[in-house]
Length: 115
Image (cartoon, rainbow, N blue to C red; front, side, top):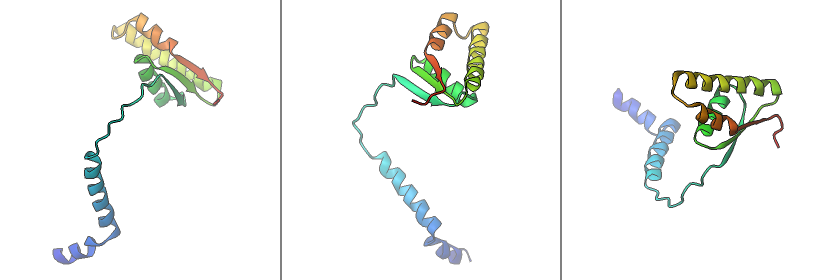
């Protein structure tokens, strides 16, 4: 029974797709790329919600200028309030200095215009 089912599945589209993925992954690992990544100097993040705010904090903490964009000012205000609250907690518990937080916050700007 097992041999019969195996023969049925062997030429199926699912099996072909899985084989393609398997060999593609191995082929990609063998590529020798000599290109060096460019240094990121500025990022634009669409959405000032939980995820967008967290991403903005990560970039600001490593010294990258951030433009946080959302469709309404009230969303940006809320997002910045959450970011500032997160940083305030970090300062309070001693994991970040106020100077570090001030520098990170100075790198985050907001906009409602996508241009």
